[in-house]
Amino acid sequence: MWVGDDYVVRLSSGQYRDAYRHEAGVVDLLAGSEVPHARHLAHGDGPDGPWYISERLPGRSLHEAWPTADSHTRQAIIESLGAALRALHRVPVPADLLPPWLADALADALTGKPWPAFHPPVVSAALQQVEAARRLPGHDSRLLAEVAEWIQERLGLFVADGPVLVHGDLHGSNVIVDQGRVTGLIDFAEALAQPADAELDTILRWCARAGEYPPVPDGRGLDETTLTEVPRWLHGAYPELFEREQLRERLNFYDMYMELALYAHHLQAGVRKAAQDRIARLLHGQNHLAGLVW
Image 1 (cartoon, rainbow, N blue to C red):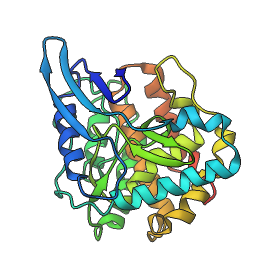
Image 2 (cartoon, helix red, strand yellow; image 1 turned 30 degrees about the vertical axis):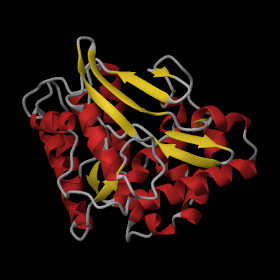
Image 3 (cartoon, helix red, strand yellow; image 1 turned 180 degrees about the horizontal axis):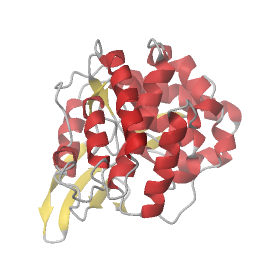
Image 4 (tube, rainbow, N blue to C red; image 1 turned 30 degrees about the horizontal axis):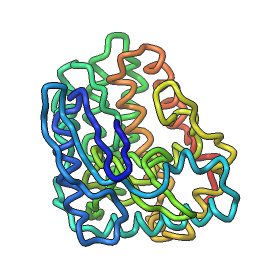
């Protein structure tokens, strides 16, 4: 990525098919809305891979601004984020909106191909992840049978949902802030149509396990203890996001999807084993949500 005074230029390896084309289409949906975002200027494919050019937003990432911000400024930022999310979830969106690379990953889920795409949750594909996990050599068949039953018991929670435009990867590095307010949400390559509270999946995991969200692969995530008030502040700014009946079970469902995707598809055995352990705990109602208050 190259950041200039007025423009930002990004270059991709092309690993995620049509990610920039998808992002450009989503950003175009935001035109005329109240969603703060970086205007898309151009995108295409070159000899070095896909590229994307957008305007530069004022400010810096929430991740960069957070450590030195006082409590009042932090609360103002999160309240501004709540307003931005409410506006995002009101943008008209095709009910089948899905990133092409994620569609590929879901189509390949039962073929045994490596799958580097773990976000965001897709409710309708949860049982598909169980079947993909059952193809793993040495998989825990008893555990997966329990998981399949657990998922089937909860699918009814989502029957009445209308899909909205969900960012899908919202954490400190994908929010730009300036003077205590959000000036833009960035990186819409994972945006899709899902229930609005699916947005909370990444946000709450980031709050509880911020160390897993560094700005760059070898960097450091924020200190989780500085994020404990974020869910409460977000609830105050966007209460309807938290008003779903049986919200905790819905959030557990999204978390189960995430862990299943890691267990079934991650290339590193250590990551798969950690996901398997978290799945076992989640079946008993234990996960990162237990320490969060909103």
